[in-house]
Length: 517
Image (tube, rainbow, N blue to C red; front, side, top):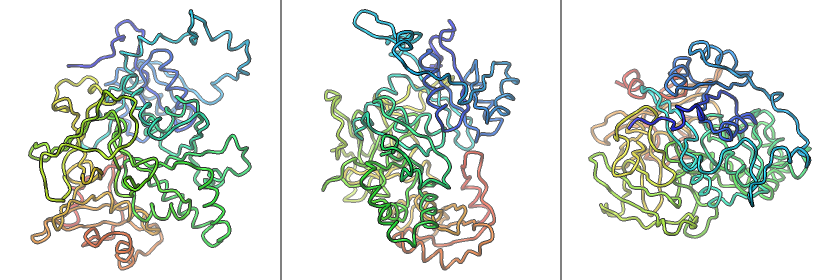
């Protein structure tokens, strides 16, 4: 089946491409599209001009909204496809005092209901498309993931209840704009419950923001979300400024413990030392979860820890409610399946699931591709036909996971990311993120090379910071301190550069040929 916007022919709902930063314009443009019945198509300025042009063409965007910072990029697109361009900045938003006279102009009473003037009725949102999110996986053309308003509402409901979002919550968002655009926890959940979101990107003053220096109580964040790489930068900033002052260090830990209730990281690998250092600095264990645009949130570490449920650096935790999951091995055999009881839709507790196991490996973890179904899962890809991405109503994520005792651990997004050594399946990403946390390593990549005895050798490439002489023995000691022996690299090479595409992907097969074969 070829998916198109149902209202496209009438002109009532069109695809609007948006190119802006991770700031207040992001939710304003997103919700502006939805309130007027349009489909939101976020773009990223990290993409090459070829990829941007492809997405605008494939999505059949009829309008581009762009921040002034992205005007040059956006203008080239609009000229190429002869579509309108609107440049917006914070001055674009009119100021209102939100007095009763202003509210009387925009609110309409219809029977017992109060509606916002210019918006569409609920029937429109029960069947319409909210977003097209384009992935940018290496060696493949971007695909437009169709996310409906019903998908979004399911995702929002699950996270709001599982993580206890409230009206008085204030979230500090340090995520990139392309992540914030689809990850409901980063702004949609807060706006849904009436909370606040603050966007921030200047990490040179991040600790003043975290500690709410000179901020009134009502403007102090109590939730933080960031990528693991951002947590690394914040820790390095802490070490530069505060590490020698024990009194300030104690104050920071006390402040964060008393004023923050949750600190979140996404599905990207989180190294043990970052997890440990962050807990030592702030008193908070970072909460990891797994999601992707196609599925929404699927797995999460627990919001509240107890004897049964703990947060770990190397796991994404337990299955979330209202999602069904199964694990399938490379031969297509189903290893396990866990189905949520949809009769109990109000259940939002993150529970240690009792899956049906199709294979018993005598205490060893089950390893295979994660597949997902449920109300959060997208409807298909825009302009693509066929069902090769689904099997028995399960979406094939392409993500390799390990499952044991009800807990999921991410190993990688392809077989290239999984290293099989000494009978274990290991995540190369977990080793890479540890190496990236080393103060003298600018970039790193971990690949697997065939070995007659141990299946595969773990080989690491490290790019030193400019002007720094990287000591290999120091790197080995660093790895040995934070990794179990079976995850430590067998071979480490220092290289001047690691090639990545515009969104940071690495061709590991090419790296292996270049340096180790």
